[in-house]
Image (cartoon, rainbow, N blue to C red; front, side):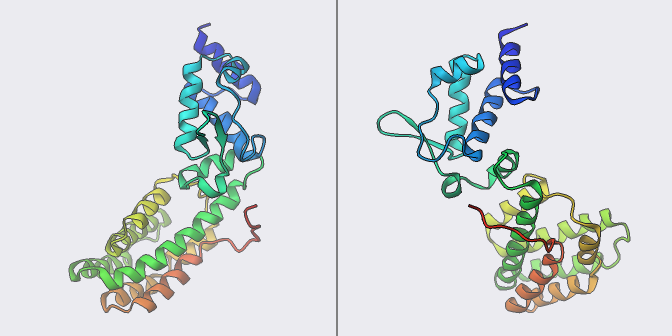
Length: 249
């Protein structure tokens, strides 16, 4: 057995799961989950490099790579004294950590994160529609109206409707002129965030409302920004499960 396979096995034994990935990736995931789960609390010093290498039977290069990724994720920082301190992820981490939060025992569940992502989708979509009505060119407005017209003749297959819906919303988000919204949109539709399957009745209610899609396109075309925002929020909120959600501690 090679040293790398030994290291992978040792990490897997500690975590109760064998995964086929780089040693540094696995070590990053272990440390990430310890931070998110509270085993390594904010303000604490990260376990020393030598101690981590000994604990998992890996070389110190793998440890350094894992710690570098923790720094990039804004989960730790190197203090002036040279110590690596754990940060409070609630104050420092970004959206790219969503999957990691779901994996931590003490973090929000995948279901909670799915609802959170759908709520974000509704908020981003509503404001993107508002900004699109204000900022988009006449050509873009025309393409949004045309796409809504084509949408009326799409389906009834829900997968086909969903693909047409994403293409239509992409025009709106691009028309908003907000790059941050566009990147968030790409992450949502690309599967970066753990958006679980939306209940069929909720997703169907959104997708099959052709008239709302056409009205929203019309609001954008005639520059009715507030009406566009209200309708977009109402339409997208239909896919958000109406279940209780506790605040993040």
